[in-house]
Length: 265
Image (tube, rainbow, N blue to C red; front, side, top):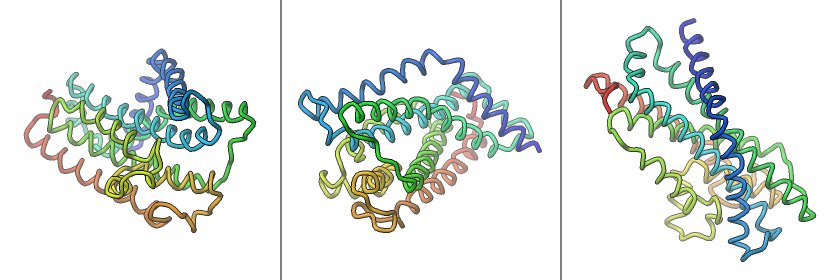
């Protein structure tokens, strides 16, 4: 019962923070879609070329989601550390797992408005160009893989901030790396083989983006994905990242508690 109450309280707190920051959300709902359109214009040499709208849209939605989700859960931890709230939380009977899971769920929900705004902008733009946004229920699998893998990455970054202070630059740098080398804007097949290999191996959104493009653009099934490392890796990669994130977070959490640095910044 304590776990359920703690989990619910964390989700509620995250959603209240989202509502309180509605001005920031409004700005992001406007700027991220504009950024998507500017990228397509840049890649199309000043034109919204139809052949670029959908591939870039799929990558941009995933990039927006991972940016929002990771940053929201990371800054929630960092804010509690700076305010001294996190240390007090660990002095209560509340299991830390409830705290972690609640923040992850709240961050995922908070990331959806901006990601959906980018998706809606892309759908409208494609329609104005005379096309139609394809729909296929199979994309639920890569979308779930992206969400799960992103949570694992957030756990790794949050675990690091419990022990190593002032690592904000890592979150910003990681998103920049995903945008450049994660297959979000340019397919991994067009990148050098070593970069494509590392992206498919470690970037939580890379296999999902490739799968969505294969399904929605190429018309392939989940069982016969022509690019990337296939359905097996699409399912295995987010699980491996999440397991790594849980293990690393637990290790760093115990280290921070032993050192007494949960409230130190």
